[in-house]
Length: 314
Ligand SMILES: NC(=O)c1ccc[n+]([C@@H]2O[C@H](COP(=O)([O-])OP(=O)(O)OC[C@H]3O[C@@H](n4cnc5c(N)ncnc54)[C@H](O)[C@@H]3O)[C@@H](O)[C@H]2O)c1
Image (cartoon, rainbow, N blue to C red; front, side):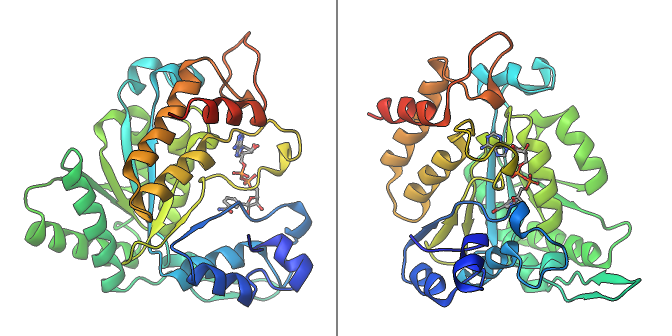
């Protein structure tokens, strides 16, 4: 285990100490707990936990963040959306992870601030190819989301995406949406989506929105991949400081991330499937943490939910 984020700032005055980088570079896979929290959230602080995570993603070259959203029948009532919109929803967002506005130069003085958003053609090409290949292994549908009516980076995104899809993946059924419309379509017709590809910030925001289809932010796993099998695996949620230390957080997203690690980085497909089945079995057996509990039912703790999943592993 190695430190990153706030714990690493406290111990090493560095959100990503060199020994953490060395250990990650020397590993086939990295399993990450969330960074951040009120203790380190002073906007004027020089050292921010989130910087450690951005740097780690960049150092590892994991530019493709895969965020699957599956709605389990048993959890349909945990979502604020109506049942008829949710049945059979099974989509995956492929978020570009190492470019865009999160990585551009930042400036700030007394009265003005700026964040630069840059995308290079090769960054768009490689993420679109990842998403298109994935769509080919699924239901052959790919939706690209941008803001090409306003942003120059999005106009480049759209040109490159159209070219790659037309030349290299003509068999796919494709769709392009503006991000504001996409935010609405994700709620009004989530079942229509198969694979979604989008840039860094749009993917970050849209997947938190999409998590509510699955009932809770605590349900969603993610895998961040590059050109090798090495990957970074983490649930999509943050450190949830409002519920920290109370043994009530939903562990399903973290455990499902471990399943993605087994499959993508270690080639252990059967083991990954066993973990995913155990999560579904625990939920089918009625185990629910507070974020997904039905009205009138009693929630189980993080520990109990985890124990039930482990007990269901076959
Ligand atoms: N990848 C990461 O490490 C990552 C991602 C997002 C946010 N963060 C950081 O986390 C801190 C808190 O951010 P935030 O509150 O905006 O986002 P968050 O994802 O931590 O929490 C948002 C809401 O979802 C709930 N939630 C999150 N995970 C849950 C779980 N497993 N079970 C049940 N409920 C859960 C929280 O209680 C909270 O109400 C910030 O410092 C932020 O920078 C880190």
